[in-house]
Length: 223
Image (cartoon, rainbow, N blue to C red; front, top):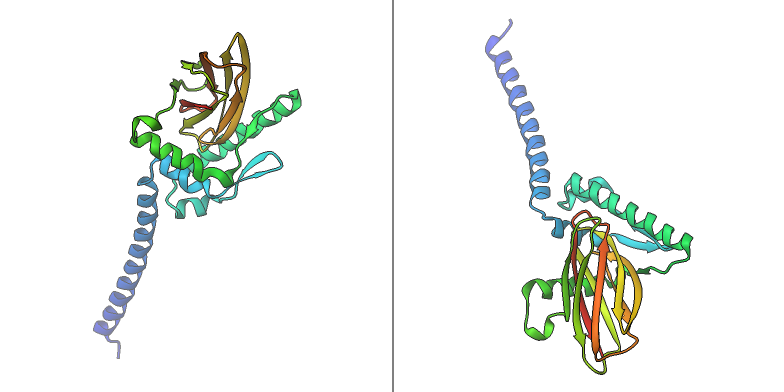
């Protein structure tokens, strides 16, 4: 005999099971999306930096889109990073073709840059402040800063800080009537050191970046 109540109970059970599965799927999707949204650009860059390598003078981001999302990096940030790496690699090839030097910061030393950037943001003590600091506008116009280099100064270390995962910057150091060119690439722009022809004189630094976020330059004299 056909049992209507039994059939209804079976259908209800199937309906509940399907609803639970759908809800779990939605819940998992929401969790991943929420994790991505909680990461700022700087946080996303810091996470992705662990997966950047320098291979044959070219930067490589060894991270798939799915892996990036699982780590809390949004798809838009992931696409941005891949574009930044591509643009910097093109610049490196251009410099090499022209026989120009560009200092490529090794990703294995990224922790040094992070420590510096963290100290800079906290503003710990006057002794930690750079001798020269200025802002670089986004792609195009450059920034300039200057300071007096006391007697005994031998070189200046120039560090960039920008929103790009792998960025580049370039410019000149004017000292003692000479203009010394420099260029560098690396995590957040990287850093480079320029030897000065003399001390006890004014030093002026001009720098540009191709990073769409722009950035800042911090320069410290070395004795």
